[in-house]
Image 1 (spheres, one colour):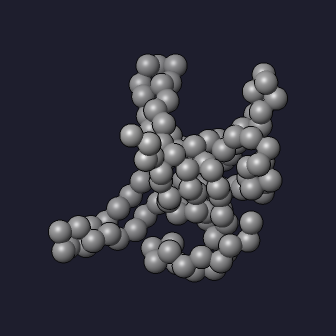
Image 2 (tube, rainbow, N blue to C red):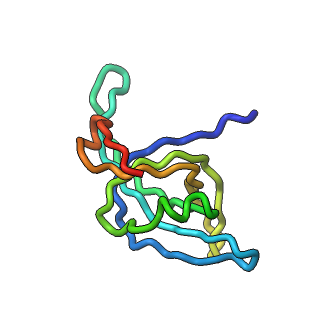
Image 3 (cartoon, rainbow, N blue to C red):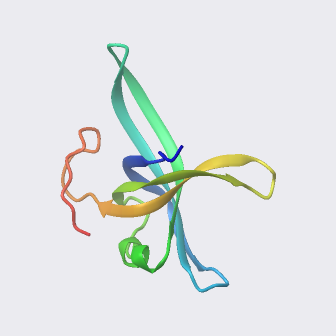
Length: 115
């Protein structure tokens, strides 16, 4: 099995943290909050998701510049399980690409790419 891809649009709801690994790889970690209405079994269902995003490497360093609480983004990447110091696990989105949303409605997916 090789399929593991997620695309989600939302608003940054926690201040990004920037760091660098001992190997010199830049990292940016932030949380995206998504709200929308989705069709399921012919009915509208409210959807609410908060997911941590990890953007690593020089290629994403420029895409994460200027991201702050309230920034609206579309993030593409893969899901991975992270285990915290407390032993609890969570799904984390490892970004491959980040687009800033400047015009449009998140619930309808209208985008104007600026990055």
